[in-house]
Each structure stands twice: as structure tokens, then as C-alpha cells.
Length: 308
Ligand SMILES: [Zn+2]
Image 1: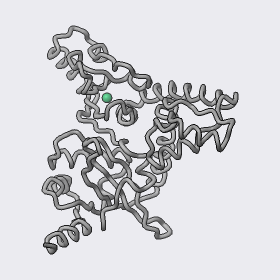
Image 2: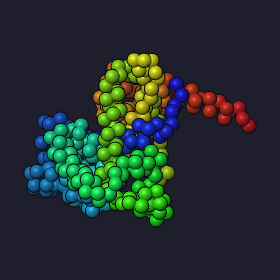
Image 3: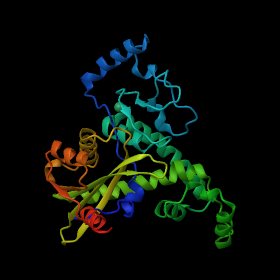
């Protein structure tokens, strides 16, 4: 099976970075001892784990209430969950992995956070009904589908184009798109893909490691399956931020988390297609998954060797 470009499918547009890269997952019984260990290590006498962490600076999203940083982490580089003290990988201010962590690890906190979030969505809905602005749905879709920078909506040329098409249009703020409209669209798309996957029994997967233009590392995960009416489908589930060392062990764990995140049972994974990198081969071995070598990758290597 030839590896697909994971960023070309629609699902990829909405599902990028959704993988919850939880480095430490704890059972309830582990939490108390972890909190004690943390207290001892940091010299703090506060008994509450949440009290040990300092909040993120300059944040607007409600989800940050559930995460913080160690006091000595001045650069605020390592996000810690206030509930389990587990480390959560996230790309700068991106909150997708934070929501994902709450959703998969702390249902009560997640529900509380989403209730707060939906009340802010309600405010936006009221604004819509009051005619403060016209529905920005298509514009949100356009930003996501074409992977446009969100600040496009602040550019004078773009605003000029939009008001030429419709003089009455009031452009919502950039923050509205980045913090409300696009995350909502992402959740909608995620729910739709998750519902599709519920009907899938057996599936194959492809994965690879990628780097963004700013050299940030990502791990992609795509699944392939045949529908009841015999159509071959592929869904690029996630391109998750992957700052850990690219060892076989870490890659194996990342892939297992990826499948778990989408409720896909490992036992129903028929095979996984990867390149021939030794860490990928090892990851498949560690997970005891059947691995197929990527034909496209091998063809590319063969042509490269033949050409002078
Ligand atoms: Zn947690």
C-alpha cells in the first residue's frame, strides 16, 4: 500500500494535532503518591497538586484552567495536568491536546470545561442572531480547508475582497476564528470521522514522522478500511506533535495512543505500512503488529540507486 500524503485528506485538515500525547498516564491510585513525590521534589508543602502549578500566562482559553507549569519552568515549556500531574505535549498555545487529555483521562473536568466553552459559543450565537455579523461558517471552512493562516482575516486585501462580495459583511475577529470557530469545526469533523470509524471492524494503518516548516516534529497516523459497499476509504486521523526522541519505543507508544484515542482496537489492526527506518521497524515489532514495507518508498530508493 502506498503511503498517502496525510495532509491532503479533508480529515487531516481538521484532525491535525489531535493526538493526546500523554507522557505519563496514571491510574487513580498512582495520583496520590505522585502528588506526594512532587511535593517532596519541589520542596512545596501544599497538599493539592493543582496548587503546585502556576497558570499559563496570557491565555484566553478556558481549558488552561486545568493545566499549569512548575514554578521553576519560567519559559512555561512543559505543560502539566493539574489533575494527574502528567505531562501533556502541546505545540505553543495549541489547546487541542489539552482538550484531548481531559476528554480521555478526566471526564468530569472535560464536561465542566466544555459546558463553560459552550456558554461562550452561545454568546457568539446571540451575536449572530442580533445581526452583529453574518455566519462565518464558509470563511472558517475556507481557512481550514486551504490551510490559510488565521491572520488572513485581518489583512486589508482580503477584507476588501469580502466586502466587495457582500458590503454588509462584518468580519469577526481573528481570535473568534482561532479560538471558537476553527476548534468547533475541528470537533464537528472529529465527531463525524469517529462515527464513521465506529462502523469499521478491521483496518490497516500507515504512519510516518514529519517535520513542519518550522522543524517541529510530528507523527502521522492514517487508517484504511473497506466499507460495507466495498469502497476503500482512508482517514488521516492525526498528525500529532511528537517532541520525544524518535526511538522505536516512543514511536510504538505514540501509535498505540493514537489508536486508543480513536477507540480503534489494536486487535483489529490488520497491518501497518511504514518506511524501512530501523526505529519504525522496531516500533512495529514492539507492538507485535504486522508491518508492510512502503512500496512507494522502496521504488523511490531503487530509482535513486539506479540514477547516476
Ligand atoms: Zn491528567
